[in-house]
Structure formats: C-alpha cells, structure tokens
Length: 411
Image (tube, rainbow, N blue to C red; front, side, top):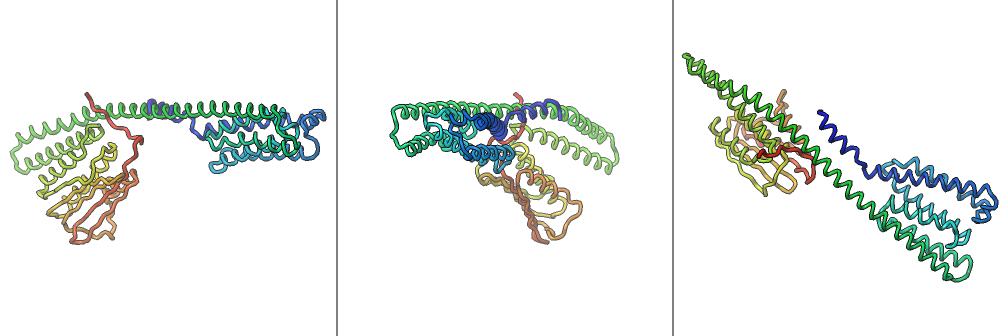
C-alpha cells in the first residue's frame, strides 16, 4: 500500500475510540482510589486522625480492605468488554457508600469527608455522562442528611441546609461542565473521524484516477494499435479464411477496448448502470441474434461503484454463459430495487441443466458468489434440463456513510 494510503488510515486509527476514553478515565479513578487508600492507611495508623474521622474499631478495617478488594477487581476487569463498565459503575456506588459511612461517623454534612463527594460526582460525570447515571452522588446528599438526622435525633440546622444546598450546587456545576465538555469532545471527535474518512477516500480516489489514466494510455493505446494493424493486414490479405481470422481478431480487440473503457467508466460518479446494462443487452442481442429485454423495477437508487461493477459483471457472466451453452430463443433481465436490497435476475428459455451436478472449473459462478458475499448477498440458480435457467443475485445496499471510494468526474 502506498504511503499516502497508510498515512490516512493511520491517522483515522490514531483517533481515540469511546472504549479507549473510558479505560483512560477508569484508570484515573483507580489512581484516585490509591491516593485515598494511602490517606486511609494514615488514618488507621495515627490514633488522633482515627478519632477525628471517627474511624475507630474493627469496622474501619473492614471498610478499608473492602475498598481495596473491589478496587483491585475493578482494575483487573477494566478492559473486559462485558463486565468492565458495569463493574466500574457498581464500584463507584460502593465508593459513595464507604464515603457516606465515614461522613456519618465524623459529623454528617459537616464532616470533612464530604469534600470528596464532589470528586466522585466528577468521576461519575466523566465515566457515565448521562442524567440517570450521575444521580447517585446527588442522592448521597439527602441520604446523609436524613441518616444524620435519625442518628443524632435533632432537626437540620440552617448550617446543615446551607451545606446541603452548597454541595448540591457544586455537584450540579461539576456535572454540567463535564457533561457539556464531553458532549463537545464527542462531537469534535465525530467530525475528525468524518474528515479523516473523507481524506482517505480522496486519496484513494486520486490514486484510482492516476491508475485509470495509466491503464487507458498504456493498455488502451496498445489495443488501439492492434485494431489499426489488423485493419492494415486485412486489406493486404488475399485468403478469405485468413481475412475471417483477422476480422475475428479485430472484433475481439474492439470488445477488449470497449470492456476497458467500461471498467474505467464504472469507477466514476457519472457512470450510468442502467444505460450500461441496457447497452450490453443490446450488444448481446446483436451478436447472438437472441432477443434480450431488460426492465427496472422499484425506485432507482445511487449505488456504490463496486456494487455497480458486481451487478454488471453478473449480467456479463450470465449472458456469456447463455451465448455459449443455453441455445436460448429469449432472455429476460430484471433489475429490482427493494428497500435496502438490489437484485438482478437473468432468465432464459434454453436447454437448462441439472443443478445437482457440480461443474468442475466453473469459475464464473464462483466469482458471482464472491461478489455477492462482499455485499452480504445471495446467489440462487434455478434450472432443470429443458426448462431454461434463472440466475438471481441479491445484494444489500450499504448504508449512508459507508466507506466507498469512487472516482470524481473530471471537469
């Protein structure tokens, strides 16, 4: 692959995915927990700190080692595609439970531990920026206030109400700013991905156009020279059998150059699939003297260039087989648009064949199946001896925004 292709693809791959962003932020949460656990270890080790926080007795050790256990488990399963996010959300809520217990043991809303509540609100907003998922830290405030009221048995004072409102406002500001910034970053990231995709398509388009020019000037020029030389030799030849061979050679060269032009045109935006199919059916009728009627059913849609090529090659393969083997008197071609599906059916009234018998070396059918598989399509061949053949190929039209590189029209 040329360097410019690799550069565009590498640039698209370098943009962070939502999973990477979550993992980075969840690791930051783990490191924050480590810092709190370090402070907790000091509280457990220094008696005056334990008394100030109210972390006395065996329950403080139980809470401390429980936090260690679920923090380590969360970190180990952080990258798990199924359990990573749910476990992080559960452990964040467990952090709030542990914080609530410490706050209630050291003064309720007036506890110095309540300052950490805003930090956990920030982590909720960073990791789960949705309205429902950031409710737990907001609910912690009235829960602590109510539990403190039940434990102490006195009504909320004006200072308690102020702290409740104050922490609530801080939580709201933190959540709003982080959710807003996250939404803006996601929007910018989508724009960057779209621009990166457009750039990659432009690079591929430019390379295709360059290759098309080289093929047209090289192979196209060689075929044109062959046609001119065959005409010159035809005029010089005296033997009728030789003239017939030269005429056949010239016809094959003309068909080859026409196929080359059609293949190059198919990669351009101005390629008309329906006209190309109709023209090919008309040429088939002219060559084989077999009537070939084509019709289009459904609302016509603009198809990706590669899908147009697959449909055209399908018709080409079917008509080639009919001309060689079918001994048909009539051929019907139907191109049908049906929602997200497009299908082409080619039917003849020829000799048919037994579909239960495998044909060795029948690469045309293999190629049709490979093209259909590329677009999540199917190939169905219906035939019986003396009953003709119907080939039906159905393809799934890619959704808007799928990566399909096509050639621009030269002005």
